[in-house]
Image 1 (cartoon, one colour):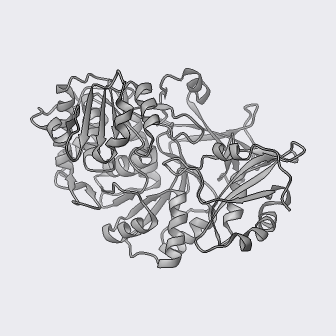
Image 2: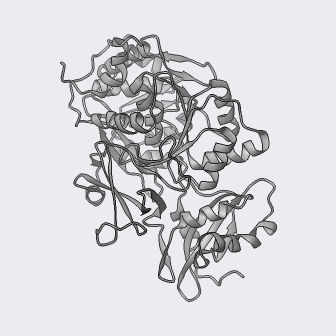
Length: 521
């Protein structure tokens, strides 16, 4: 039917009708270096839809996708949408206990898992009363499961189910940067909403582009980078199923020649450090983007100097599916998050819900067509986050006179010193301005008098000595951001606690800093 708004029709099947059947949609960067064309994806996703129906999955039932970034991922994701089965893109780095929680919380009827992840997922299936089908991709199928090849074998292709743009298409689970993950439900229309706004009007994605995203498909940011945006124009995505270390990222950039690179701040910082020692790779990059957390000014400037391509630092969320606030090509100011993406409206409000004036700090709210329809099974949290057409981000921002947004921190991370708000991110940027500091995180800690003061946790670059660095950090922060904002305590750590998407889990650091302490000298 002509009014079918199943997202798979636009992102997959359309390209066959428009003559791109032989165009590579995905290619793998390692191992077998398999390629999947748009024509093959259309046929394979039709077959996956038929296989899901043959297995007895009904419309709106859920299939948990615990998959590495590999060719089978787009086949099953778009096949599920065609069958009107709801794929749940899950983090591949979770523990068995978290998988157990999510599989029971979501009541998924089926699980599809990469063979490499089976040992972690298997314990989560024990005692689960909802999962009745387990599909394993790669290798031999363990007892009680079916291999992906056997699952697909002989399945009759199935045409895309008739749906409206407002029907649920897929779920994501929040990263857990503030605690327990939450199921976030997105509709079919949200995918095109992001490609028509950020993808077309900021990223300016083209059919000839080749995209490499270190952020994985299970991450809302990675889903847009690796599938939604390139598939909106018939471009090609490079998939890598391993861990994106700085060395590996540079190798892929050099070998695969992507034109668009999609990173996260922690990876950019580590890769800058790597390139300062080993040199920048040869590349064909025309543009880079960053999200997940705010990109430190120093990191963005150093990357551009080394690579010669801008990083468009942007802000998105699992709830909004992708970036809604961003710097733009030719209009990049590192240390800011840019301006509203065309198609989105933004406002910042104080604790009383009143809009702030330029120079003030308030919580960021966003309105746009890609907003989720709510959290699964968390009505109170849904009502607190989704206020009519507006979505609360939980991020604090300052708005400049010329309309740019400057990140100040999560609402839960902000605190006052001497009655004045302190942005942890602002202090962190001052700390990593020191050439020996790789990463920093700042949280409040109470002194002996019960007053909150900043405490910093830092990761030093290889070869740096704490005895040389620590004495100069407090004066550095005082000089850069203000005398009252300097960290009274600084701890050197091997690494910072993060989610799998690279977000610092400051709530874990706050637990470490809960005891009152005398100020360091």
